[in-house]
Image 1 (cartoon, rainbow, N blue to C red):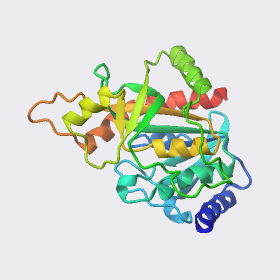
Image 2 (cartoon, rainbow, N blue to C red):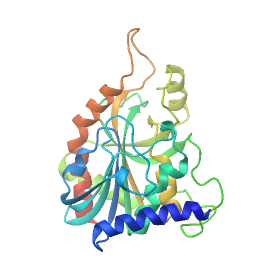
Image 3 (spheres, helix red, strand yellow):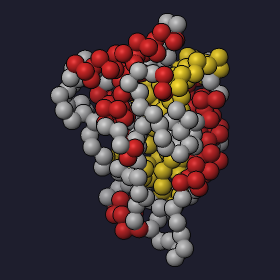
Length: 275
């Protein structure tokens, strides 16, 4: 317990020393192929994960592995170009440590993004989906002794994604004439892609999109009392009805995410302006 807390505070203290007393209003976690938003941050302080005490190293395709702080949408923010995944062999404490670190840095909001497969039959590659709720099939990151400094033993998850932020984004998308969907995100362990039978099952239980991340970070953020906004980029149609020669490919996922990234970046930047 004390070791866990000391690792969080040590990482936060190091990053505070790099931020010169500035406090970010928003923390952003950028998923596969979506790291370009970090390149739009002005006057950036760029800290590779390997320099931050107790941070893991991101090994996933399309994750640059930098912590960036600077100006975006007229406000001081921090962003992670790449996250940590359970499938990389990291514990849930390691996967979610950055969220608690950003809490100590002073963030008021957490924005999360990911590349995901669309199990909803209406979803197409390149669609953007506002995450309105989720289904967790990963280990819960709050298992173990509760970190009372951050939140209660049994945090409420009735509204894991903030309704006010969702409403604002819907208004932004209408103003910008950006088409957006709204649905339920499901996360499994990975790293293997799902079978056609699993795709059908996940659709049956209420999922619209599926991936291998995000939910542990959201659970920890809500434990900390941080409002969350989440968005998925649909990078493949996981409908379960595939041609005989179809193969799910990680590089194709990154390419599809990259193609949709500009629209997501504009939404995030405008949302920050309106906070």
